[in-house]
Length: 369
Image 1 (cartoon, rainbow, N blue to C red):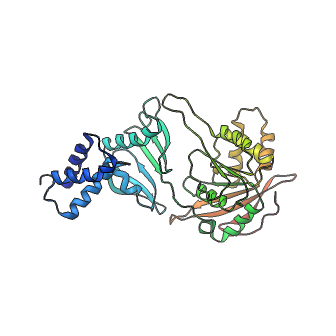
Image 2 (cartoon, rainbow, N blue to C red):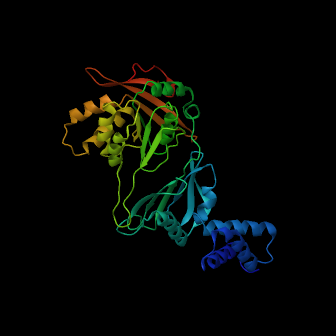
Image 3 (cartoon, one colour):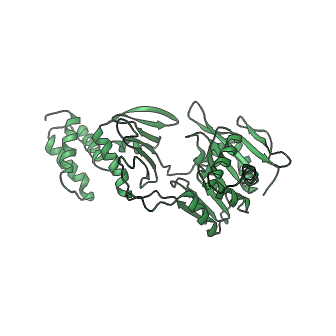
């Protein structure tokens, strides 16, 4: 036998790529190539080599072992070199390294099946893998060295409200029962979408729920749920469908509650109008560091709709539409939790009434829809 296991792996992978192979015969074909290249290899080493070659030539290539680890929630490629992951709330480098050729292969496998391409005129691409995982690729010239890839893993099972929110769960459940309109806010990776999915799981199964997302992530086990997903333009620049278009379409689908995965643009105005016009118990998320900042961001996004509305009018509508803001945080040990809940007070002066402070319930909601 000549060469290290890594060299043998690369030779086998190259040989495998030289001709088409029936997917049902992939395992046998790889085993035959390994036996030809390394006939005296120990049994354990042979089995390990077969697994590594299969990972390299299928799926996400060298990332497959990381993608198969249930603890991994995010995979980050910052260019050639070590692959970074977030696992159990902590970001760390792994022993997996990718070359420029590996990066090119991974980008091709992610974007090819969905009809997208990465080039200098289309250097930022979002896509979804077959298992629901979310992918963002930034290429040259925006990424200076090589394509940068981030993969947000799709959780196959939904986290329950009690598991996520602990002692705050009964209050959140009460908000859902009262049909109050809720916006979950927090920084990136704090668990906003996870909590939104847990809240959706508390909705009565007799209600029609229409869920709108950029990338489908929210899982709800209920019979009357409709999922709508935005679509990016194809390689020719056609076929894009925005969140705003989906919000308008959703209103014609007779929803009892609307759920918008994240508000970050002009769709905020359509959401505010929908929430203020009788779709009680609706929910969304927003990137913000406080309840007041979340309200201001929603106002700003609504003004981006270009309807020439005065700020004061938009502000009054936002405060009329949003009942409660729920703040989530990621703690130093990686756990995600509910830290603040604030009720929007209405009257001569608009204000925020705290229901939860520092993870402790301090008051009950004062009204229902």
